[in-house]
Length: 271
Image (cartoon, rainbow, N blue to C red; front, top):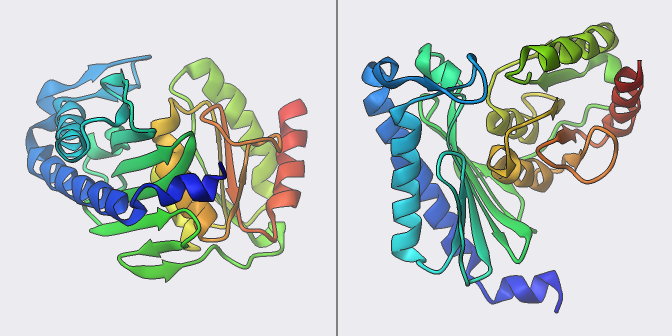
């Protein structure tokens, strides 16, 4: 059975509505909780990897909305882990991408909800509550921002490209990533670090950045929705080594610069 025939058995538009509604509702909850967010902060993998009651409450809301509508689906959530399902649909949820930004009152944070069908990501919704922007995509149907089509940039020259990136929470890995940035920054227009992978991918989809790369993300919840949105907007996605993308290695770039940036990243990795 082909991917297309498998997908035809599930109403992808209904999945997208569910993802979008849950992301918007969770975003409203995050905004309501923001004043008190600092009171419940804990750390996870390192002193700089923070989690709050807002993260957990947002995820609980999204999971409840999904299971109320589709109780047989599997779920992978950043805070609650894996829940098995039998339908072939698996949801990947980042309930608060950009927790540090959120806790500091920075507007660059989002709720990310993606769904896969038999292993293929088919739906993605990323909602930025402060910006009140909803990025969406359904596989094979393009990407949208608040219902309007969006497209990756037509950038063809790496020297004038704007890149987004991110850093690991572990200090020793940040040091390595910093050395890579030092090798790239004089070869491109500039590099930005916003602190929310889902939004970085959506920025590429909307042409607000020409490319995004990052190594060592936490899990599929970080990139599932955003990668689909970037790809459906026309960006090329891969690992930073040229293979399939994964949380360990993510690259999304405008088609005109993907190959050149991939070569540059490979060189920076080996030096």
